[in-house]
Image (cartoon, rainbow, N blue to C red; front, side, top):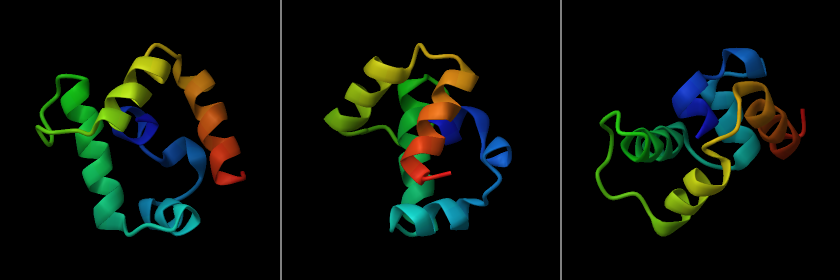
Length: 77
């Protein structure tokens, strides 16, 4: 969700670097980002999973710095 809204610049990693840390391919990461774009009403893939909806409901109201902090912990940064 963070990447679809704010990009990767403030994380100091490329999408490839983030994908590597998460153990997923860049294409898969981009598809997941597109799911969150749909949830946010900005286009994207039209059938996000229940898990994506749950993540959106849980974290969607956080500010950019709050969300970035969580992402950095997940990525071990």
